[in-house]
Length: 187
Image 1 (tube, helix red, strand yellow):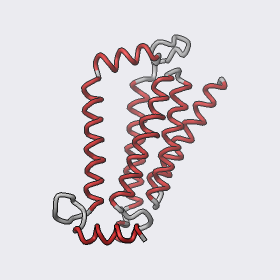
Image 2: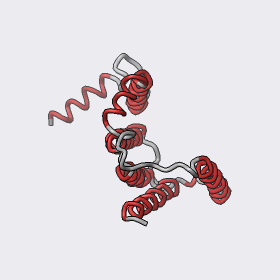
Image 3: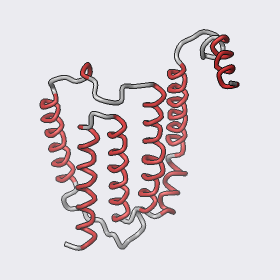
Image 4: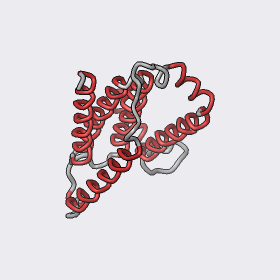
């Protein structure tokens, strides 16, 4: 076993451990931070597989944008962040068994499908910037643009929900609340 394989196994173990902490954490902010660790370990795995562009896209888009969007969504919607007894059920062990069985089936299916496949890490073509750029900008432009519009709509929706109800064109509170807030700032 080479050093790269050992490092790949260590990063895989970190990713799996952090992913387990994501789904078992009772605090949503802690779960989002464990998600950062999981996605960072996956980016390290991509680097070891010589897919540098995919690794940096993983860091910039998933760690840098999606997790930040998740945290903004938590802050703007005022969702319960800590433990909440009303959302906790006694089905935790049933969920763990179902998740373990699903994971076992997925590992078995993927392992059997790619048992004879090997990655030539010295070829350097599959994950290169040129090959990925051609694939993205020739075939996948429309889905990426549709996703960007969807994420923008989600952000605008979170802002609208956070401002709460209230009539009027501003979407906020009444004008007396606004003038009272301006007087507090002036003092």
